[in-house]
Image 1 (cartoon, one colour):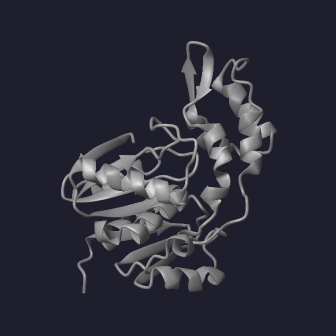
Image 2: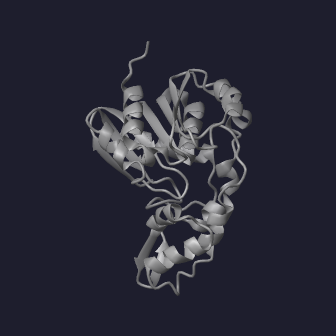
Length: 258
């Protein structure tokens, strides 16, 4: 698993969401570096990490624990956005002795309906062999129903090579495992106990990812939880109000147990 390390102190691992990479939470890393050893990772099938045929949360949690062992850490804090939040929660539930705190940004421990079919279709229909520029790629995505902000985010995965362009991420692998990514059966399938250490859920006020009807499932799996809503933000809350988001995460991670 590809990663970058900065800062010093208690270790914290930052985990990006679907279609992202380790740069997505770079601003948060900068805020944490004076107080923490910060590890930013490329999730498998993203960035410079290995491509997997099968990608599910138990496998991702196991890979994360292997990285923690490789880095020589006994316990770590985890911060994840969207899919990254699910990876953090799965790892905490399956390996509670290794995880001290969890921050889940705009995601709940529940199954979701498909939300990215249009994105997959737009990316798959982009002819990389005939592509002449990133501007042409942007035009293709926006003309296929992707808003410009999301399109620019997706194009961070586009790279030039000797034959033209290619995706850094494993697009076919992500699509094949999409039901695992939006699903959630960790507690039921693995018969795990609730994670009783501190958890912090931050949700976007305009987002539909963490809703009142999710409260029961959140409390059942993460009873020692606090929740904060960032009003005026959507799913990309860490990019829309970075100063507030970074401060809240830093304060939570620095807080000593009662």
